[in-house]
Image 1 (cartoon, helix red, strand yellow):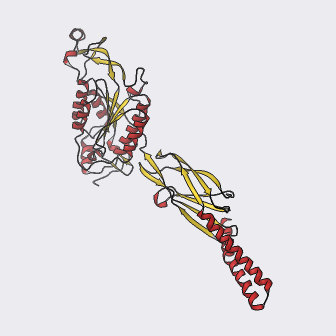
Image 2 (tube, one colour; image 1 turned 120 degrees about the vertical axis):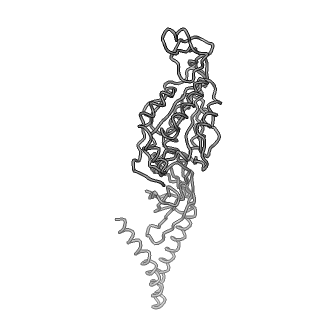
Image 3 (cartoon, helix red, strand yellow; image 1 turned 120 degrees about the horizontal axis):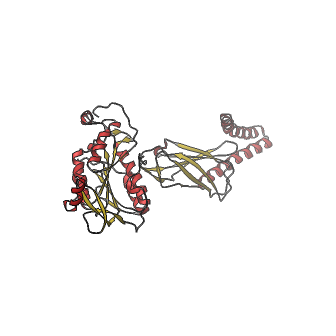
Length: 423
């Protein structure tokens, strides 16, 4: 039906001006004033109609409104307001909105009714976000106007661009991290936790963990139970949560949007959102990333700041010492904080992470390891193949982290199991 109507409009576009010209020529040649008058009226009518169409196109204004940020796979609702500031009504109009740069994807809306002069026509459409994290522009839009007879068609580009920030896709955890089990019941940033070897309300003895101070050993209980036991007290400690994300280029595996870096950012985004909601003070460090300075704060504004930094985060060309930087960041944390390490199981050796766990225990910090299996991602280098051939199963790696004193949280990562060589 649409093609039939277009063919009819195309025929009228040439038939009407030709008919008017023929009538005028016939009236002049044969001396028929009636035919000449009809031809003049027809041409003047078409001319006025074309001028009104161009005038209406010049007076059209478009505004676009949507959420400034979204996540990949989310449906973004876009509201468009088309204002007619001319003196002529818009009888037949289409709006083609370029959803992404270069107009690869367009959403075409045909206005259902007449837009009178000095009025605004509002409509909306839904766009599925299928782009990876980054900053994009929606627009420009193209307006197509047509008169009722289809003689004149006017297309006008409306350079209306709105920015859209695509955040990392949140990751999925197999179980919740212990410090996220309940909201803080004291003032934000402080709660009562167990501290070993500090004066306070005595809580009781517990088994010795690597990193506990020797001065905190309960010798009588050790002799009674036949194993090392330490004294545990109640004390006030900060609830600062340090999030240390491995973003080094040497640990990068995978291609496109399915990489270890994207997985680490998604997991970090999930933890940040829940920890900020529960009132924790956060400290985020991207080790090896272009954002080399730590981000510290709390609340929704802080969450937005970190997510904005994640949008354009890229790995540095230089190699970074993960354990060295992490050890310096751990030394800056107040007593009682929680250090969460987001990394792949093969990215750092268990011996190096054992030293980090010992440093955390010496400062009464709680070390948490968010591990995902690197082998589920496409190998980018021969070095990755060597690591995979000598590495134990992922369950054994997680068990080794637990023996070092980490609270291990495994993640549900669906990987690309294709065999890859050097890239």
